[in-house]
Length: 151
Image 1 (cartoon, rainbow, N blue to C red):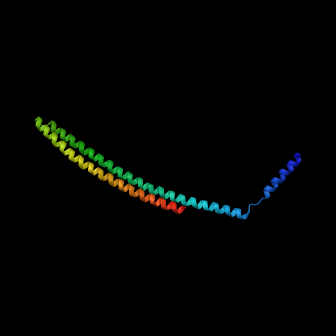
Image 2: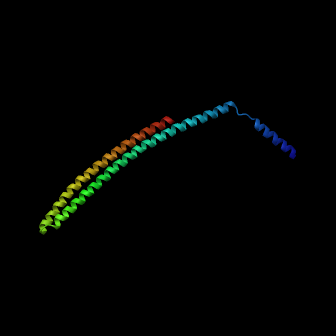
Image 3: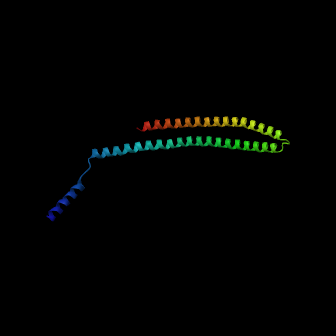
């Protein structure tokens, strides 16, 4: 019985070695690999282009954020300088009414300046938001266009 089993196993291994894959199956498999590679290449290319476009959006946001941060620092320096100058004038005032007048003038000028500075920052923020959205919409539109081409 063991000899018969061994003989059947040897015949099965011999038959397996001689089995040939039909040409139509090979052709279908090759075409499948080729189509898959083509789809991958298109998707890879679209992904790389999308990443480059995303970098431009990020650069726009960073540049705008830096502009706003620089403006905030400049406003802070201006306000601090004005505060120190007013404080010196107030402490040097010869009378209490004069000190009160100087303080009132300083507060009035600072409220006007704060309004101007706030308006300027609002305009910068609006410009940044608009620019960012335009870049984002452009990137998204191009990305969806390319994804549509890969399908």
